[in-house]
Image (cartoon, rainbow, N blue to C red; front, side, top):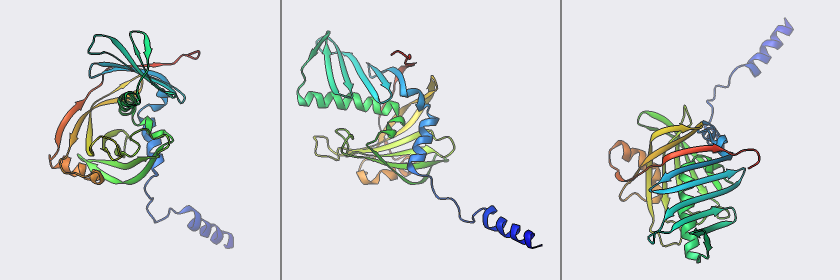
Length: 258
């Protein structure tokens, strides 16, 4: 009888679930699940090519080493390749590498890096400069989402390291259907503003999820009010700025000897 009572006591102490409800997941756990849900592991050693607004992009990643390239024809009819690597930006015109001023380097870096960043999301959220915070659960169009806030460390955070982002990941699938961001918060020449993107035309290429986005703004919405975008969306109170479309996407895994 004594052994039975001891066993019962142990069950009550160890075997019963806690009456307390579990807390929210960590921001990093949500990011890890989202990257997996989007097929992000494929991108560790792969080349992604696509067309964006008439320019051809090639994004090569190899376990932390990267080469992003934008190819286009300039106003003089010359073939131009703008490149961005771990070492910095470069430009090749008709086969010749040319010197770039600081302003030209900055503009090239911003253009190529921003297109790569948005195309490859959520994988870039694994970068060391990312500072994620779990904020809350939201409901958008009847679906529950984890809402994460992301800021960046100055070191490694790029030229726009002061920008602030919110991301919404489905509670059930961890797919990223919405994001918002505040830009121009630093000392640059860009006036502050905010944007909200809603995904559409979601598709998978070689197991990687890509999407196009409707790009909205809300006049008068301050940079510290990004969390109000879902309510504005529900009230049909957003202004469509543009559509962000990527075409002709291809994904190729790097060979062992590349």
